[in-house]
Image 1 (cartoon, one colour):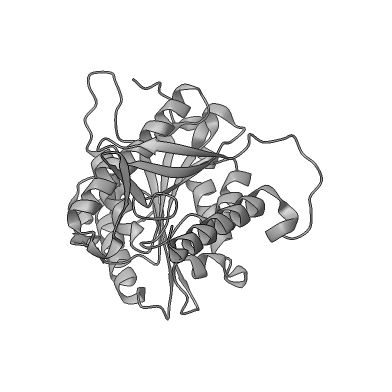
Image 2 (image 1 turned 90 degrees about the vertical axis):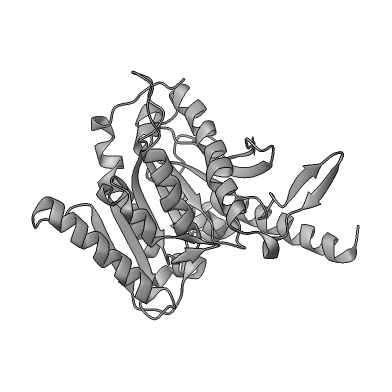
Length: 309
């Protein structure tokens, strides 16, 4: 193996080990150790096979709340990976959420695919619109399949699903939410309409030919609770502000004035993406946690749990 590949692999392993230590041990990245509490189900790494036979890795943090657990999918930015979101994952998991962080094809530990008997690396520079379509219809559907199995084991309530999209993954999150919201049920068999809220952090307007704005043309998406978080001095600020105002106008028109389930956090910084999330003085993680708790965690008793086929 070339020295460069060895170095890349070593960096990925170190990043994952650091992340797992950060999530598992409060004293490593989260300050002083806390008194012992009943042990929560442990994090596990899962391999998910997509319909087009690509294996992606994901990190799953179960909840101890059973059917009352709100599932959250945290979606990393383009050319990113799962490891920067340890503190966000821990905060949501502490709130009782079952959190999964997939690494999309071409990213993190999901960099290769099979060609015959050999493995070939994805080339991010050459990935285009068709590859984003495969992430939406393949990677994200594989994640939902895993959550569906967890739902049927009564480990969470899939009907209370939250998506958190960072930077370019805001586009992926919105487009996959449209797909989910319009997925038809068959008789009494529920297959879609599971996404109940979206959090978009430093949302990008475009990704490889996919537009965030076009998702607002869907008849369902804009009705969901939304939270938008952006650094006021970041390059995403203008587009995020315009997207928020479109959402606000649509919600006001439908509600004839009063708007609920819409939060806009314009933070005084030029940071974006994982740097915005992890800068503790800005309190972004607490803001996201508060939104998820208020919109879904506190309402889980009112959200029907449904077994899935």
